[in-house]
Length: 66
Image (cartoon, rainbow, N blue to C red; front, side, top):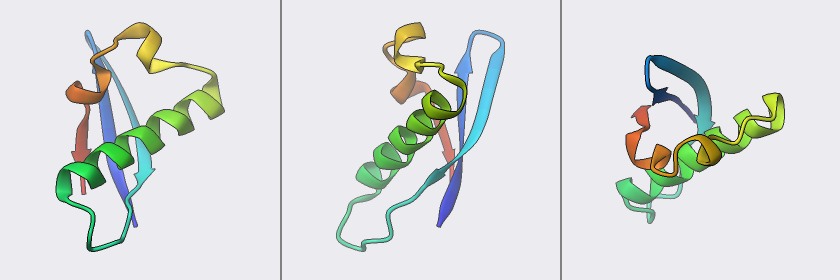
């Protein structure tokens, strides 16, 4: 299963897909964080952009649409 993850940096939005873990034992916050980390890894791998270097709080500012 995939979710849309939107990162907002100033006026710029970066939108990508992140894989959602399907284990029922993982709490919602854990699923959200794992989905965000997967999306950030995908961005870094595909375009070489490390979002943590731009904003250390990017994880908290991300929007996940399941």
